[in-house]
Amino acid sequence: MELILRSDVASLGKKGDVIDVADGYARNYLMPKGLAMKAHKGALDQAAAMRRARDVRDAAARQGAEELARRLVPQIILINARAGAGGKLFGSVTTTDIAQAVLEQTGIELDRRKLHIEEAVKEVGTYRVAARLHAEVEFPVTVEVSAS
Image 1 (cartoon, rainbow, N blue to C red):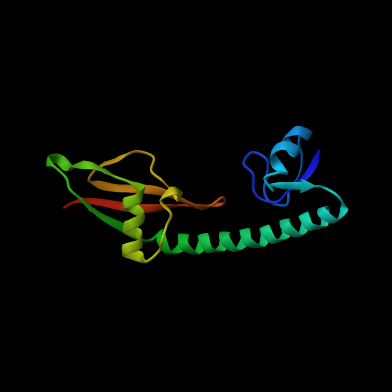
Image 2: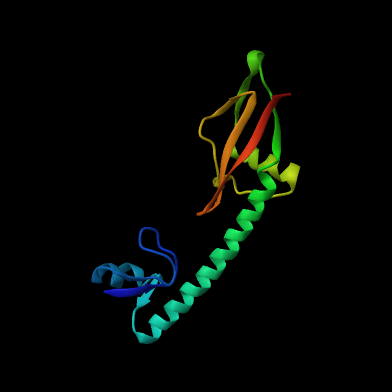
């Protein structure tokens, strides 16, 4: 059955996409939950409008993410943590700690789920944390952890 998505559905597509799914899946899940509607001429025109609006929003979000990247890349985020002998931390520095430090030091609010730490931060030192604010915008945030 050919449908038009009314909202983003994981593994199927984004709002406004025309998809082809099994009849039972469409009738029993997608349509009753309001996630999709049948594709006909008027609905196809509406889907095109949804895609255009999505593209405009996506371009604005990308531009905003690029602006934040330009502001954050040259910054060094300082985090003080309790450490023992040899620079080992009591615990570790998490993405929540980093997001909070970015907010306090730069005034930029980052979602902790957009930050990706490759290895656990358990020692004093300088680390690079990847921030992915948009599907096409990923940049490093430099974090310097010092003993308090």
